[in-house]
Length: 266
Image (cartoon, rainbow, N blue to C red; front, side, top):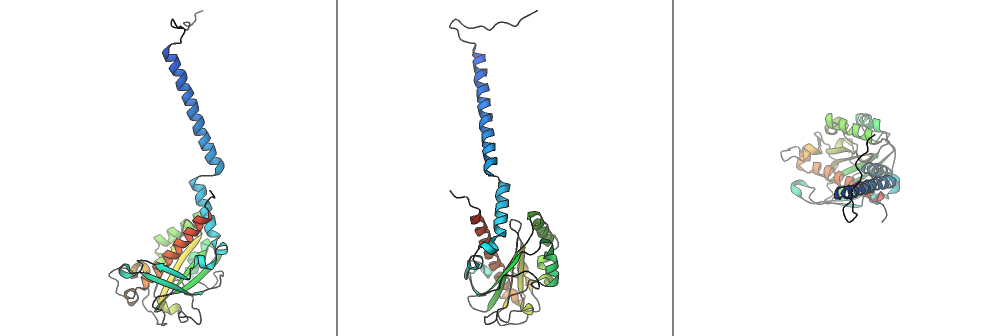
């Protein structure tokens, strides 16, 4: 039988240097693993993950239709700095708010069919006039019944099939009696935009026209009407900018309120 070499010590009774360093290194590794494990466990316990925050924000946005006052979603006045043609400023004043409803009869048949896969929890609409009172724009928030994957699927369909640019898929305006938008009907639609959100169960849209109820025979989606070389009368009048500018600002407000609703108290 053989035995390993016995441990040796120097003349002062100290262990060899290599052994001491190994012990220190081992202790550091153990300590480091403990700290990492504690951090991961702590993050899991508080649910502080990007995925969890996204789910919370998505759910909070979906609840805004009954948690947020109408003035929060559709402010009485909306400022559109740089939103007009050539970067001109715009100001929109709310002239009417539609009662919150379902979606029955709210969309042209083909648009209703395209939106059907995500369902309809609630539809909120408001109509605004520009500072001159010559243009009117209806902006809508369709709160869906869908989860995030279904919203992403619908967004891809709108993108790949160019659904937001088809004239047979224009949103309908909200014409309120006794206002400058009283004559804003389906034949007065001049420009429009539709945006399917993927971080909220919401479809945001806007449709614009003239306040004098003139009929429009060549409506253009906002993306086309805002081009520098657009020649249609509605584009020259800036109605594409009206629809897109107002929709963008209502959408920003929606996201801001959803983010505030999910903030953790300090």
